[in-house]
Length: 152
Image 1 (cartoon, helix red, strand yellow):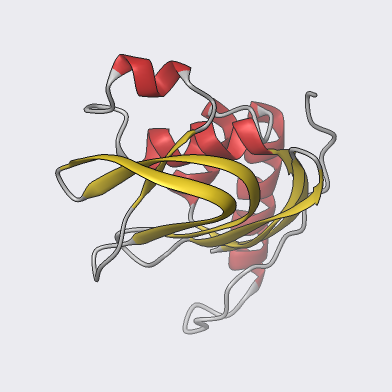
Image 2 (cartoon, rainbow, N blue to C red):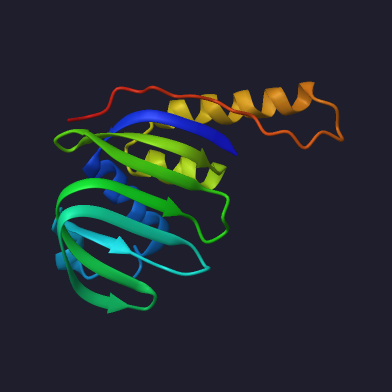
């Protein structure tokens, strides 16, 4: 696991959520609409969108698609439980992303343009370097903080 603490645009986190949970079955019209977000509850991962105005649109499989305006925050837990992220609004559609992410989630963040591929490589190699320095029996996790300027 890698500790995440960075600033990112809401649309980037939306792309991450979609690629991590429902890219294979999200309707094309929902994919293009930047106000539509996936929500999911249960033991197999969860996504909760906290917004001033939120309306359920359609449930497909275990994901409910919602139209959300004035988003205050989003809480995401992966199916495996290895990734736990929170996005909190700072100003407008820019927010702070914090929590723990797996290597797979780092790759998805890169695909969503939250992190650059170079940032992901640096974080992973730093994590591997730290693991090599630790005793083989150690279960401690590497913590890396990234503060990356994002597209607007």
